[in-house]
Amino acid sequence: MHLFEGATQIKLNIVPFSGDGPSWQAALAGHVDATSNNLGIVFPQLRAGKLRALAIMTDKRSPIVPDVPTFKELGYNFTSGSSRGFAMPKNTPKAVIDLFTGAVKQVMNTEEFRANAVKTAFPSDYQGPEEYAAYIKTLDTIYRPLYDKYGKSPDAAKPKAK
Image (tube, rainbow, N blue to C red; front, side, top):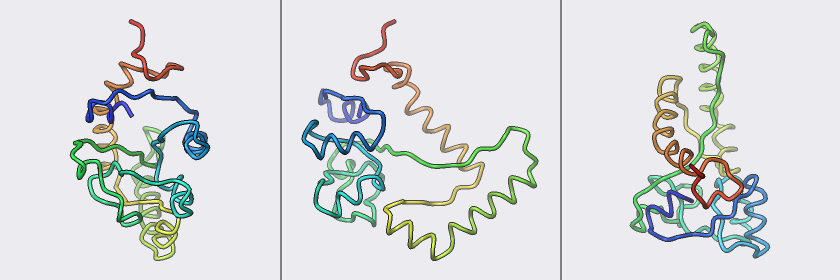
């Protein structure tokens, strides 16, 4: 939400939650005006018409919610999101990494996995270890300044005391 504030020059009253579940539930109950969540978490509520998606923080529209514009389309130049990945100890042999990543890629390429990913609004794409490591470094350059400024304080809307 701090990225949103910066892109829009709008000051928000950011309410910290312990995760997506309490956040979307607070929006559904009318305790907060809006929430920012992973698509897969709120998709059942979107599909049921209980929540309304205003925009998505991806580069391109999602095929899962094709009628929802991106923030970029709305004139706000930022993206955000989360990813899921695997980690292994630093000294794991390359043969073990290759075997594991090959199995993950094979599963992700099955029709069953792809169909379930669409059904559960779980956008997924395979990135190999080098690509994913580069992606994580890119995320660090985006989010590290926000963490350095706001940290994990109970009042995430205020900068950390120096």
